[in-house]
Image (cartoon, rainbow, N blue to C red; front, side, top):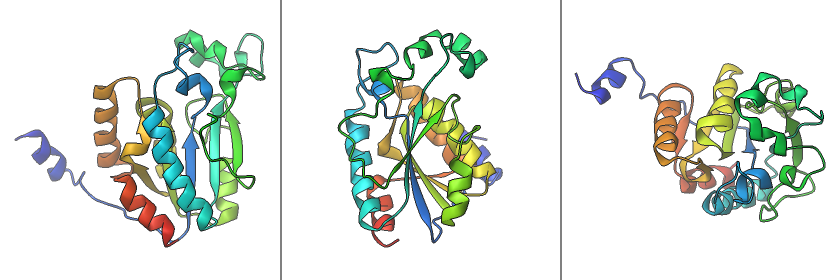
Length: 207
Protein backbone atom coordinates (compact mmCIF):
# COMPACT_ATOMS: atom_id res chain seq x y z
CA UNK A 1 0.00 0.00 0.00
CA UNK A 2 1.50 3.36 -1.02
CA UNK A 3 1.77 6.33 1.34
CA UNK A 4 -1.26 8.19 0.00
CA UNK A 5 -3.40 5.08 0.30
CA UNK A 6 -2.28 4.66 3.91
CA UNK A 7 -3.47 8.16 4.78
CA UNK A 8 -6.72 7.79 2.85
CA UNK A 9 -7.43 4.46 4.58
CA UNK A 10 -7.06 6.27 7.93
CA UNK A 11 -9.39 9.08 6.70
CA UNK A 12 -6.51 11.55 7.02
CA UNK A 13 -7.64 13.48 3.97
CA UNK A 14 -10.72 15.08 5.52
CA UNK A 15 -11.35 18.82 5.38
CA UNK A 16 -13.02 20.59 8.32
CA UNK A 17 -13.66 23.74 6.30
CA UNK A 18 -14.25 27.30 7.43
CA UNK A 19 -16.57 28.49 10.17
CA UNK A 20 -18.49 31.73 10.59
CA UNK A 21 -16.26 33.79 12.89
CA UNK A 22 -12.52 33.89 12.12
CA UNK A 23 -9.46 35.36 13.79
CA UNK A 24 -5.95 35.70 12.36
CA UNK A 25 -2.96 34.52 14.40
CA UNK A 26 0.42 35.80 13.18
CA UNK A 27 3.10 33.68 14.82
CA UNK A 28 6.55 35.05 15.68
CA UNK A 29 7.19 37.34 12.72
CA UNK A 30 9.58 39.24 14.96
CA UNK A 31 13.00 40.51 13.95
CA UNK A 32 14.78 37.63 15.68
CA UNK A 33 13.30 35.31 13.06
CA UNK A 34 12.99 37.58 10.02
CA UNK A 35 16.42 39.21 10.16
CA UNK A 36 19.35 37.03 9.10
CA UNK A 37 21.65 38.97 11.44
CA UNK A 38 20.16 36.94 14.30
CA UNK A 39 21.36 33.32 14.46
CA UNK A 40 17.71 32.23 14.63
CA UNK A 41 16.72 34.34 11.64
CA UNK A 42 16.21 33.77 7.95
CA UNK A 43 14.75 35.42 4.86
CA UNK A 44 10.99 35.33 5.35
CA UNK A 45 10.22 38.19 2.98
CA UNK A 46 7.63 36.19 1.07
CA UNK A 47 5.91 35.06 4.26
CA UNK A 48 5.70 38.65 5.51
CA UNK A 49 4.31 39.87 2.19
CA UNK A 50 1.64 37.18 2.00
CA UNK A 51 0.75 37.69 5.66
CA UNK A 52 0.20 41.36 4.85
CA UNK A 53 -2.27 40.30 2.15
CA UNK A 54 -4.20 38.38 4.79
CA UNK A 55 -3.91 41.28 7.25
CA UNK A 56 -5.38 43.70 4.71
CA UNK A 57 -8.40 41.44 4.24
CA UNK A 58 -8.79 40.88 7.99
CA UNK A 59 -8.58 44.57 8.86
CA UNK A 60 -11.10 45.48 6.17
CA UNK A 61 -13.67 43.16 7.77
CA UNK A 62 -12.77 43.87 11.42
CA UNK A 63 -11.52 40.31 11.88
CA UNK A 64 -9.50 40.09 15.12
CA UNK A 65 -5.73 39.84 14.69
CA UNK A 66 -3.26 38.55 17.28
CA UNK A 67 0.53 38.60 16.88
CA UNK A 68 2.72 36.36 19.01
CA UNK A 69 6.34 37.06 19.99
CA UNK A 70 8.80 34.93 21.90
CA UNK A 71 10.08 37.13 24.72
CA UNK A 72 12.15 36.23 27.78
CA UNK A 73 12.08 38.57 30.75
CA UNK A 74 14.48 36.60 32.97
CA UNK A 75 18.27 37.19 32.86
CA UNK A 76 19.00 33.48 32.40
CA UNK A 77 15.85 32.73 30.38
CA UNK A 78 14.50 30.60 33.21
CA UNK A 79 10.98 31.60 32.15
CA UNK A 80 11.52 29.54 28.97
CA UNK A 81 12.34 26.45 30.99
CA UNK A 82 14.10 23.52 29.34
CA UNK A 83 13.26 24.85 25.86
CA UNK A 84 16.07 27.40 26.04
CA UNK A 85 18.52 24.63 26.94
CA UNK A 86 17.43 22.77 23.81
CA UNK A 87 17.77 25.94 21.68
CA UNK A 88 20.39 28.08 23.49
CA UNK A 89 20.17 31.02 21.07
CA UNK A 90 16.66 31.72 22.27
CA UNK A 91 18.65 33.80 24.75
CA UNK A 92 18.79 36.52 22.06
CA UNK A 93 15.03 37.08 22.46
CA UNK A 94 15.25 39.19 25.60
CA UNK A 95 12.65 41.78 26.53
CA UNK A 96 13.77 45.20 25.34
CA UNK A 97 16.01 43.91 22.56
CA UNK A 98 15.45 44.67 18.89
CA UNK A 99 14.95 40.94 18.26
CA UNK A 100 11.59 40.78 19.98
CA UNK A 101 10.14 43.65 17.93
CA UNK A 102 7.67 42.75 15.20
CA UNK A 103 9.03 42.98 11.67
CA UNK A 104 8.67 46.60 10.52
CA UNK A 105 7.17 45.46 7.22
CA UNK A 106 4.06 44.05 8.88
CA UNK A 107 0.86 46.09 8.54
CA UNK A 108 0.04 46.25 12.24
CA UNK A 109 -3.16 48.10 13.15
CA UNK A 110 -3.86 49.84 16.45
CA UNK A 111 -6.68 47.38 17.11
CA UNK A 112 -4.39 44.33 16.77
CA UNK A 113 -3.19 42.53 19.89
CA UNK A 114 0.45 41.61 20.56
CA UNK A 115 0.92 38.59 22.80
CA UNK A 116 4.23 37.57 24.40
CA UNK A 117 4.95 33.89 24.98
CA UNK A 118 7.74 31.75 26.32
CA UNK A 119 6.99 28.43 24.64
CA UNK A 120 6.31 27.28 21.10
CA UNK A 121 2.50 27.33 21.18
CA UNK A 122 0.64 30.61 21.16
CA UNK A 123 -1.80 29.01 23.61
CA UNK A 124 0.68 27.94 26.30
CA UNK A 125 0.05 30.02 29.45
CA UNK A 126 -1.14 33.05 27.43
CA UNK A 127 -4.34 35.03 27.05
CA UNK A 128 -5.03 33.70 23.54
CA UNK A 129 -7.72 31.14 24.41
CA UNK A 130 -9.64 33.62 26.57
CA UNK A 131 -9.58 36.26 23.85
CA UNK A 132 -10.80 33.87 21.16
CA UNK A 133 -13.68 32.80 23.41
CA UNK A 134 -14.57 36.43 24.14
CA UNK A 135 -14.67 37.14 20.40
CA UNK A 136 -16.81 34.06 19.69
CA UNK A 137 -14.20 32.75 17.25
CA UNK A 138 -14.70 29.36 15.62
CA UNK A 139 -12.00 29.53 12.92
CA UNK A 140 -8.33 30.32 13.51
CA UNK A 141 -6.09 31.22 10.58
CA UNK A 142 -2.42 30.69 11.46
CA UNK A 143 0.47 32.37 9.63
CA UNK A 144 4.12 33.12 10.41
CA UNK A 145 7.03 30.93 11.45
CA UNK A 146 8.36 28.38 11.81
CA UNK A 147 6.23 25.74 10.11
CA UNK A 148 7.86 22.86 11.97
CA UNK A 149 8.05 24.69 15.30
CA UNK A 150 5.75 27.38 16.65
CA UNK A 151 3.27 27.12 13.77
CA UNK A 152 2.82 23.41 14.29
CA UNK A 153 2.62 23.74 18.09
CA UNK A 154 0.00 26.48 17.82
CA UNK A 155 -1.98 24.53 15.23
CA UNK A 156 -2.05 21.37 17.35
CA UNK A 157 -3.29 23.37 20.33
CA UNK A 158 -5.85 25.24 18.21
CA UNK A 159 -7.29 21.92 17.09
CA UNK A 160 -7.28 20.67 20.70
CA UNK A 161 -9.21 23.80 21.74
CA UNK A 162 -11.87 23.05 19.16
CA UNK A 163 -11.11 25.61 16.46
CA UNK A 164 -11.40 25.03 12.76
CA UNK A 165 -7.77 25.69 11.98
CA UNK A 166 -6.60 27.01 8.62
CA UNK A 167 -2.96 27.29 7.52
CA UNK A 168 -2.40 29.46 4.41
CA UNK A 169 0.40 27.46 2.84
CA UNK A 170 2.37 30.33 1.34
CA UNK A 171 2.12 32.49 4.47
CA UNK A 172 4.16 30.20 6.73
CA UNK A 173 7.88 29.54 6.51
CA UNK A 174 10.78 27.56 7.92
CA UNK A 175 14.57 27.30 7.79
CA UNK A 176 14.33 23.97 5.97
CA UNK A 177 12.23 23.29 2.87
CA UNK A 178 11.90 19.55 3.59
CA UNK A 179 10.76 20.27 7.17
CA UNK A 180 8.35 22.93 5.91
CA UNK A 181 6.82 20.58 3.34
CA UNK A 182 6.64 17.61 5.70
CA UNK A 183 4.93 19.60 8.43
CA UNK A 184 2.40 21.15 6.05
CA UNK A 185 1.53 17.64 4.88
CA UNK A 186 1.25 16.34 8.43
CA UNK A 187 -0.80 19.26 9.77
CA UNK A 188 -3.18 18.95 6.83
CA UNK A 189 -3.58 15.24 7.56
CA UNK A 190 -4.21 15.57 11.29
CA UNK A 191 -4.95 19.03 12.66
CA UNK A 192 -5.77 21.70 10.09
CA UNK A 193 -6.77 22.52 6.55
CA UNK A 194 -3.75 23.75 4.59
CA UNK A 195 -5.15 26.03 1.92
CA UNK A 196 -3.85 28.54 -0.67
CA UNK A 197 -3.50 32.13 0.51
CA UNK A 198 -5.78 33.34 -2.28
CA UNK A 199 -8.60 31.12 -1.04
CA UNK A 200 -8.15 32.25 2.56
CA UNK A 201 -8.18 35.91 1.50
CA UNK A 202 -11.48 35.31 -0.33
CA UNK A 203 -12.92 33.76 2.82
CA UNK A 204 -11.83 36.73 4.94
CA UNK A 205 -13.27 39.20 2.46
CA UNK A 206 -16.69 37.63 3.07
CA UNK A 207 -16.35 37.28 6.85
